[in-house]
Length: 265
Image (cartoon, rainbow, N blue to C red; front, side, top):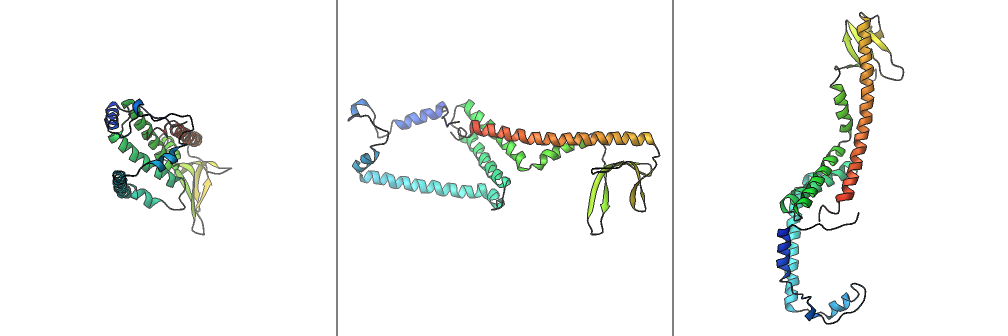
């Protein structure tokens, strides 16, 4: 999508109109010396060489240089404060998160500036702010991709009991957590993790988790059915988290394509 300009708010257009009245260049018919056909800018270097450099023009150039230096210094100091937290977190080895942090800082700064000093017509200014804020929300989610799965998993967990995991300690000092279990009687009803998991009623025998006779087979079957549903919902939740992430990437792409050139217009 090519860059296009947006209509100015009327109050800013009036300011520009007033300024234009004081411009030195007069483009009226009375001031035309000659007209000719040619490519744009083909005579610009000859025109500059022929232009007389007066003391007044040199003074204007010097004044402009002083103003440029002032504004450069002003924004350099401002940006050090505005960008300090972002810059301090970036390393040469940073991946996507470094890029996203830079985008977030710049867009938040832009929103603040647009809200205070935006000069487009109201409907255009409001749309720029709205779409930029939506982009910031997308980037904030993408900065922590694990949260896509965490949120969906928490939604599933909220509908089920707090399952316990089997803690297995190893001689080398390591440990693992696996399976889903609920207390039943003197043992636990549930299902192990892995490719060929055991399921049913378990008890600890000589420090090892072993299948045993259930004190209430119906209750054990109910728990196992519940756990199977839980695992099924959890699998679907992870697939949904992947879709959520893909949808955010697609939406971000559309927002950037439709607005990147017009946000700063």
